[in-house]
Length: 97
Length: 317
Image 1 (tube, each protein chain N blue to C red):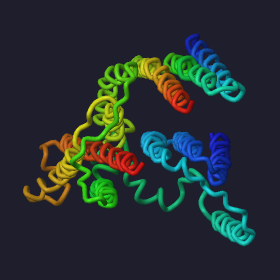
Image 2: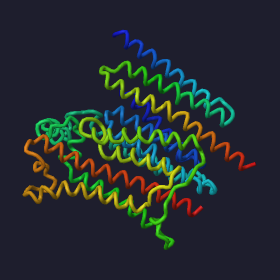
Image 3: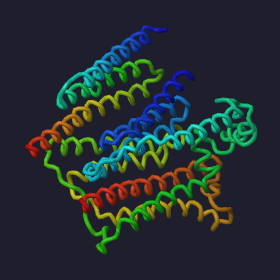
Image 4: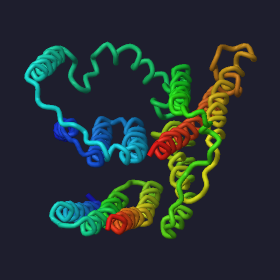
């Protein structure tokens, strides 16, 4: 096992710790808006770290480049989905009152 | 990875029992999406990435989108919770036990000595590299050895689109004349959609062209490209639905042309050897043409299905 394999596996473990944190927050936090914050942690930090570890484990550079492209996609679309959820909930709550 | 498959199978079982006992509509739709995601993981664990990609795109994403639009009207009604009936419980348990008893005689998972793997699959695995020259067995069987069945599959999807259209078009107003789509006033969402469109077009075309070498092909890329149209419909006036109908028939026509041209040249239907002198190049050209036809028709069918169903829901609410 080379050094870069060990680094890759470590980063995947750190990423899965963040995903576990997000799941814990999703279950334990009280309100809808706080739950959106908890779920966005997995989208913006947990999954990109796991993908970075996978990119380090690949045997060819082209596969790593493709995985880094997917990480860019998550960085753009993760906060967008949280924003869409929060904005819709805010509008519906204001309409209800 | 057998134990991981068993764990996900049990999770799927528990989730589906929970689905059948839920009465709130929006959590029900999300549980069905989660069930699709779990079965995608099961397909990946069983070494079937083509099926996993199609299930993720259609089951977890497109079906959930359409069902969430339908969930808006169902929210007002209460789904009734059925009481547990003793006779039906006995019937279900008996049927399940009979099926399990019949399943004892089936071959175990991954057994290579069954007749299925000895004759026809062995022929495909041994002769694909010589006959067709592409690395993906699935694409070789789908597009070349059994290309006639794939023609039937594409026709089925277009027929489903037209059946939905015939059922929905009931009020004597032609639904294809309306430009559909709602407008949202969010600046962030419109700018992000504008940015991400090019990215997803490149991803869709990459999956379309790489159908021969890696998991992908026309079906998956058609769905991914349809998601762009669905996302853009929230911010811009969408195209008339009737252009999607024409485009789906056009895709099927491309497929049929790849079959008729050999007949005009003296070969049989869907025989790709007319396209080039060298055998492998001819197969690759033929597969490229039919994947193009499949991609175009699936793209337009999925977009038109989304617009028909959600526009119908908006009209009756």
